[in-house]
Amino acid sequence: MAAHRKPTPHPVSGRTALTLALAGAAAATLFEGSGYAEPHLTPAQVKARADRLYQEAEEATEKYNGAKEETDRARAALDALRDEAARRTARLNAARNALGSVATAQYRTGGLDPAVRLALSTDPGAYLRGAALAERVGDRQAAAVGAVQGQLAELARLRAEAAGRQRDLAARQAELGRHRAAVRARIAAAEKLLARLTAAQRAAYDGSAAPSAAPSGTAPRGTVPAAGPRAAQAIAYAYGALGKPYVWGATGPSAFDCSGLTQAAWRSAGVSLPRTTYTQIDAGRRVPRSALAPGDLVFFYSGISHVGLYIGDGKMIHAPRPGAPVRIAPIDEMPWAGATRVA
Image (cartoon, rainbow, N blue to C red):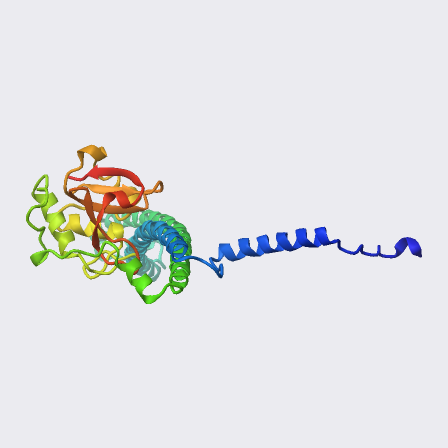
């Protein structure tokens, strides 16, 4: 029986207890850190962590924007297939009805042998002409049957393709939901962190590099001239957006995210840009930082997760993050990733 007894636990020594306590504290700190719940953070630490969360939210926002484009395309393709299937079904039903009418007529007149019908006919010549016509009608009927069979096969193919598109749409929608949840979670975590700041500290955080207004939504005098009329129009649009709120997923005219602002600015100049930062960077010719011209798109972070519109003098107009409206800012305030000249 003694062999089956549980071993008696040894008392914990002071050194072991201290080690376990420190390990537990480290684990607790790590766990809390993953939720950004440390009880003692300086305002600078709060701001740094909030910045990081907002950057992660923006990365998720750009992925959301891309997934939304894919979802919209998948939905449009599915709708087109469904419309085509409906048209094909209507044509198939009409062909079936026509064949049904022919079959009914044949049944009604097909009770007598053709030789008997010829013998009984009061006009054999007319009967023979009618028989030849009936043979030609029969040939056409056979062709009609073949056409209906072809329509059935095509309709089955369309329905199978639509089912595949439906699965693709469902996958895109699920991806969209994941990115949406990621954006919301990071913004909520950042707001929870920033709630620790005093009103003055929060105002300083939100209001740093405050937006500068331009009269009548145009670029103020003294700025570096744009490379061309389209770039000038894009810049004028961006100046007109100063002070408007950042809303993730928004493309204007009352709110923007970063790529939504640059897309809207260039759209006002008649140029269609892709929706996301990581596709906009390939929408034109890459230019080195030393050769920037007003109107160029400037990108930041290694993941190409932020974009602004260069306006000259080392500055850009961009939509920074939730709580920070469209504003003018130096291009040095974020890690540089590259620049593209659209037109």
